[in-house]
Image 1 (spheres, rainbow, N blue to C red):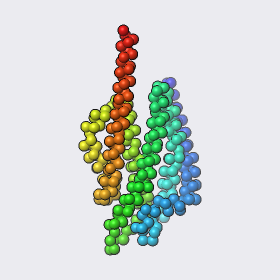
Image 2: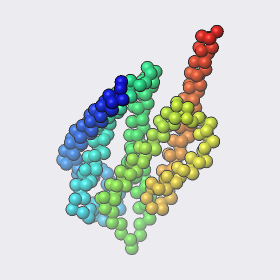
Image 3: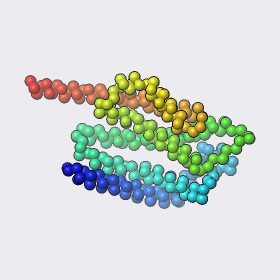
Image 4: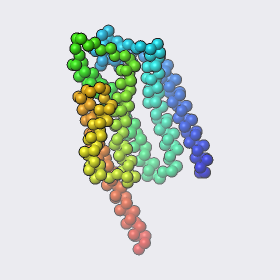
Length: 254
């Protein structure tokens, strides 16, 4: 296919993806407009004991609408992700071999599952545990005034961070399959990985709460160790394929 035809196909793939996100956003916005109350109740449940009146406050006239747009936007991206993923797959599929096509579909599905697992872990485990630990720091002379914007922003940041972190095994799998990294290199970089993941956890977690930082650092570094195992399996399979290709080439020459 000529280069301009590739650009034309890419343009239509992007248009279809944006259309899917737009349609999903319309449905998500309607859903949140009618059911924002129960969603908000579920989200603020972990922090409710820290709220003087059991409710979050917002300080801007458009604060509640902004939160509604954020929640609807995140939900729309989740709902439209299968369509967007298919458009990416349809654009790349002609350039892949038959074997690569068979592999990439389960890899993409596993990547989506890992992202959702990371988000669920953040919302259902990390945030409640962090809030519970922070409640132990309260004193009578200091009353928390937590705004809805700050709390929902914290939820979104932690959710995206966990979802992105859980994609690490997929990234390592791809890099190993391309021959850019090896499990030996990853094993040698354990100290750097531990230090970098600790710095990342310190940046993501709020304030100077050491326990929350360690709670985030543990899964990050654990995923790095898991990535080494994934890399080892992929690297071994890659070496077998290369050895088989060399033996076939030698046989053809003889």
